[in-house]
Length: 380
Image 1 (cartoon, one colour):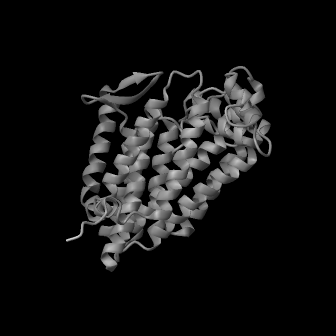
Image 2 (tube, helix red, strand yellow):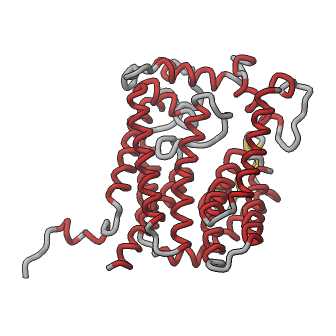
Image 3 (cartoon, one colour):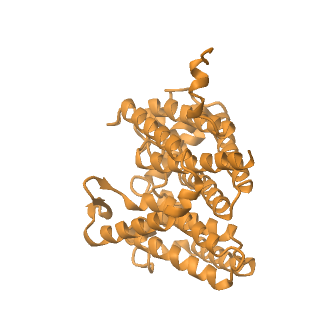
């Protein structure tokens, strides 16, 4: 009996992988490595650390992609309860770093809010799957309560950036499940109204003696810095001013790889994490940005196609929410670096240095791969 070539015998390792999604992710990872080499110069991080993070990302993605979606559904409520329990543990005896209580030691130090980025859409997708065909308006109220609990716990840490991401992940599920537009539109309208008020009366409400309800002082400063970064160019507005200069100085084709002056002269803070987009823009210019935006567009497009073709309501809601979270990550990060959104700790997917965020992304991509694989298996 003739032996099959080794590559054919190992076919089970990647059978069912979505090629277009996988190639898009690989292209983003390639950009991540190229940008990291430049952005990490002078920083206390090593290429070996990012390679380890990327390898962990691929291992997590591959492992999750082989888990049937029905197991995501079975585990949803338990993962959610675990996440909420860990958030409560953080509130009671969490570790404090840089004035924020966001971590807890369970043998290893973890940040439970990262878990909720996946657990929240899983839980709500599970809930709407259970209510399929008998949905009432009060079901959306229950879903909003389920969403409000972890969001409030995360915002209290305080970690407004992650709280907004978890809130967005849950709201995507609720909207995709058919949340009434006659209720959603007025809510959005009220939000836009308050944003306009902040813009119009920013000069008054940003005065030091004016206190904002709910928000912490540093969160108020971030919004006010967005409105007028030049009010404190060497302090609170430094990040925004320098990143905008870097993006603009890149021009059409950029200054060239490893030739960015703003980054290599240490004008850009957090250049290998939150502000890595400024480094990339300076060195690769508008053309590089178009390529990067095109890759994120392909990622979101393919994710929504997988969601629309998923065989169950749970899979559709989960895939749709995860895909839109990738969009939210990219939009918020690019927006804050470009000076059109407040500075919050939101990474640029696949590009930002870090391990925890890449693990979360690996779980998300793996879930999309699993849902695609399951559809193929069902059809065959």
